[in-house]
Image: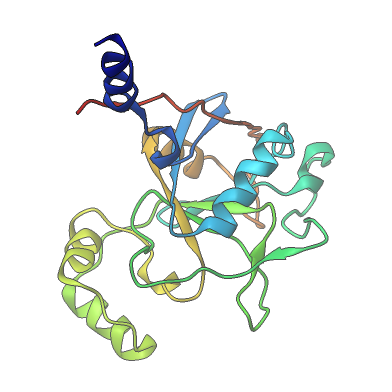
Length: 220
């Protein structure tokens, strides 16, 4: 009887932590931003997790902010940047292959990978952006569809109309996560006074950490 009980107990409790998505915390002087990274973009997700664990992002700046568009950060050159220095060209010696799909799109709060104009659309190994966006009308979305050849699902269209985003980036940049908490912090950063290169006049530094996964159990 005891043996059967032990075996049964082993099957009763099954840890499902591996099934949970990665979560990232960005700490700033304005507050914290909590991000969920997607499972269907493993290359970009695992890369950001690695850089966070290696403390690459710590003390980097949100070096480019544009209201109703996005905030961008993660340039290693920004750690010791001088006032007025133009940023955005820094990076690592490799890029991450694009993981662009029709499911992940540039809704408000989306996390995307910055990149240059390379034809493969491979992304930076460190620079990222968070979408602030704006709301779009049906006519505007129709025009974007005609120009890009990309069709929005009814759900995507409704989000762009009611919540907002940057749909013109869809198909061009990898989206690999989204904001869970702290969009008010993102909005504050986006509204900071900035210079002609969209760098905030006041340095906005970040500390990025991987949040510990909470173990989850299934009981049968």
